[in-house]
Length: 131
Image: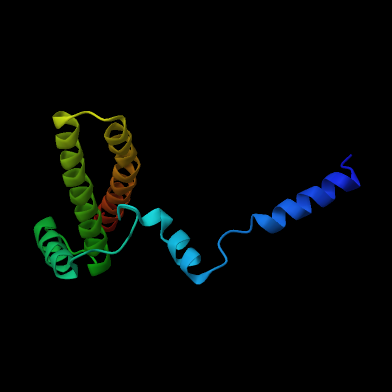
């Protein structure tokens, strides 16, 4: 059973740990997850994605929806972005392996897996639509 004294101590601690209160602090903390930009879902060049989607739709040989072609184009561009970043990180490791660089290189795996899952999901939808 929790004592009254402990409950009061928890409440006073909770008042001190409520996160940022200033506008600047809230802005900074809201951007914590965007350190490298790999978690974002938007595409840096929408025209490139649209061109790739058109090429994918034309190259498949069967009709696909524009949404499915765009989803596949987005996953391909995400994989390209992640893999080019991985090459840059590998180059940094080769010039002087630092624990920080190795940790960041290992952290890329999460984003690579997410992009591959998205690509597989889209390809499954495309193959199911063909049948």
